[in-house]
Amino acid sequence: MKNSNELSLRRQVEKWLAPGPTIPVHVTQFSRTRRGRRRYVCVETSLPAGSRALFFFRHADGQWCVFPPAADSPELRFT
Image 1 (cartoon, rainbow, N blue to C red):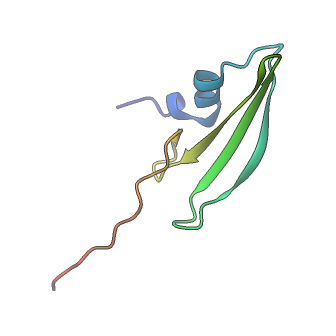
Image 2: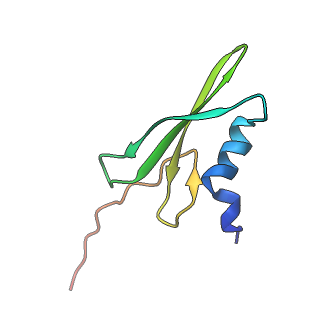
């Protein structure tokens, strides 16, 4: 089991965008998805060669990842 701190938004931004003292990051967009109402954040860094941006999605377990959570699929139940 992974440490919950490993998949925090801060750790994911550090892992994927590698900001530093001279490379700030900015949240450019945040909201909820239409389907499932799950949170997402777009984070951008500005470099001399250009900017980079990534979307991070919050999963049901509270962890942030660069891939969206699996859609809640409908279930067929018999009672």
